[in-house]
Length: 277
Image (cartoon, rainbow, N blue to C red; front, top):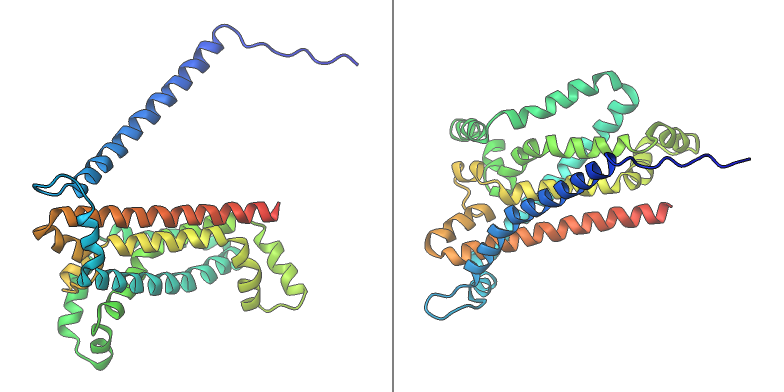
């Protein structure tokens, strides 16, 4: 049987493909310049030492400043608690909606957008009113420290991002088949979630945790209005008033930390795909 003839690209198609590739290169270069030039400028400024050239004095100041390290630890505690509470709320809810009530998925997605619609300033003003006017023992315990006070509200802010990350992960797996197979083998629903569903959406869960961490390390409005000045974003702003170089170095260090976490999430996802192949 004769092989089917191969279609050759016409003379008008090849220039179009070439132009498309050139435009992609141009857009990539422009995007690289747009993102890299400010970062390189910030790095140069953070290494600058007035009157003595360049060095790592600003970065060394971060490691030797107890207030900065303390604020970073506080924000990391808030981020861990926020990520845990958010995932505990989001993962079972997303699984339950996809299995039992797929018709209300759109309504739930619309509800999770509300924290994005409401400005953080408005939310902080409402929280400040509650903080000032409700003085019961529960509220006094809640607002006693920045960890207990900010975590519930950061959970609300993280819900839109975490829900979409987890829901996209669930959409990429045969969820109903996995759950039914686990239940037929005698596993309960909690065991199914922990031993079957979570490993299957590990990349999505790590992505949701990373987004939560980035949100906590960058949110300043609520913490500043509620006067919790021991958090990392507030400390960055306060340091910038007296030592601009240290503030820029601190911002670059936090950005580098976020990149490392993102690479770790990508590596975990790639390792998961290779092991399942």
